[in-house]
Length: 88
Image 1 (cartoon, one colour):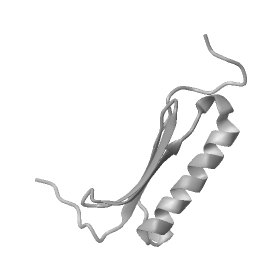
Image 2 (cartoon, helix red, strand yellow):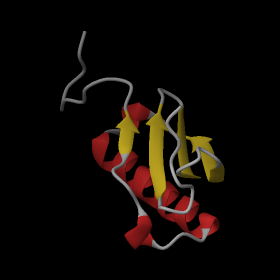
Image 3 (cartoon, one colour):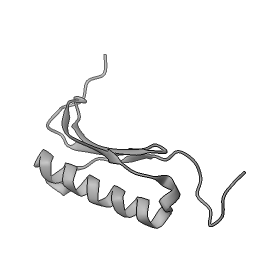
Image 4 (cartoon, one colour):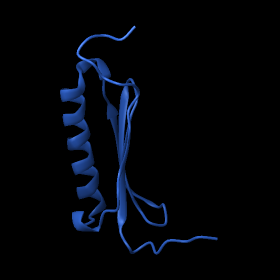
């Protein structure tokens, strides 16, 4: 069984659904150190949504009390591709 040293670092992830955004920070043992979930509307567009992602990730990092230099590569989840006009 593969096991990571939980003190090696942390990971941050964001999941954006059609109506919500979740930003989380976890240690390398997959223990969630901080979690933020708020309503978010993708129809507000990429600029507004990505700004919200940035704010929520920042707040989750601060709540987790983890130094930014300890973060491993990060993953993001988005509900669909964005364009300047509706996709049908």
